[in-house]
Image 1 (cartoon, rainbow, N blue to C red):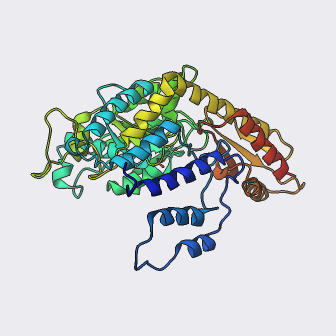
Image 2 (tube, protein in one colour):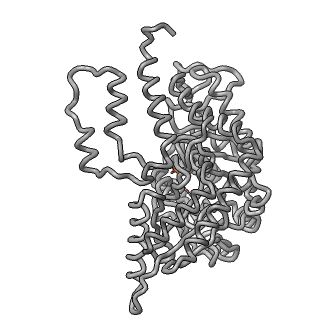
Image 3 (cartoon, rainbow, N blue to C red):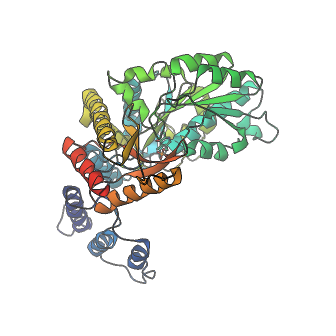
Length: 469
Ligand SMILES: *Cc1c(COP(=O)(O)O)cnc(C)c1O
């Protein structure tokens, strides 16, 4: 690089700021410390008339964001289901921005197109999915649902003599969706985007373990058996990480000609561990599956995966060829499978993360995070004034905090739970979120950061103990 290289100064600043951020997670508060009004006041300059030096732009950005960055990179971040960033994945992601490839088609991003092929093959091996399944690297499970359910729509309506890509949905046979009461909101959003409408959804109640049962599913399938049907199952639901019994349910759905879609946003990773693989028995019999890289694999945002057994249906839903795009024989053009046109090369950080971990590293990650989740939930749940609500099956569990007044009611316990969560977050020592589960406010514990250690668990338990006073 020459000394007047236009990139070096800003990149060097960003590099220094990045290292400073990553190396300070032990001493930084994990939650945000700067409020909305202050953040707006800092960023909301009037549109600049003249440009600003690149280094200044970067320095200002870091200064103004201070206190408005959650410590998701920390081993003590247990909110939602988020995960951190693995070194190889982060570094590879910087290269994705540097290379600035448009991963729409092979001709625009030749190496990226091949990296996606290889990384998807590795993912299918880890998840135990058929190697013949087609795939798409998308922004997250939300768009993976859209991708997979668009394939389902194509196939189910084609079977009913209706070409949805040509004819649209008006006048088409109505598709119904059977799923569980524990579904993630992204499923409903996919259903809205695809034009099925929320009324097409029937939510079936689960058993005590948060699973759909064969008799419930069979009963629902029998009534209205002539309608094209999608069954959405779960590999790890958002609150307790429940796994539907795939080996029992999928053959039943098959008998009725239903398309089976599996939301495996984080739970599919359990297949990488010999200890937890049994939870996914039969999952490979489904028609489509989703998973996120940006959660348990610890790639940077955004990164999710869609897999479809019926590759023809998948391609039928998205294929698009124009006169001005160039096609290379035998190469994989992402646009044939993805909802986006221009897009980021998401295969690259995935490939890098899978290489840094290796198969054994991922098995270890799954088992380690699950052990930490179990320790957190059982230890916090055993504190005076706390109640263990759900011990993790894998990496997700629930705790509730009780109002100890003798006449306390359920709403009092709900309030107490939110109050204790807020106190823990305000301590800066750890971050947890709340959820309403079976009508009760709970603290949700999710462990999916590769850096979470036994020391982090101790610090978080201590923070909960102090919050309980
Ligand atoms: C996170 C999550 C989603 C949504 O995934 P995004 O990557 O945020 O789009 C869907 N289902 C489950 C079970 C999840 O945990």
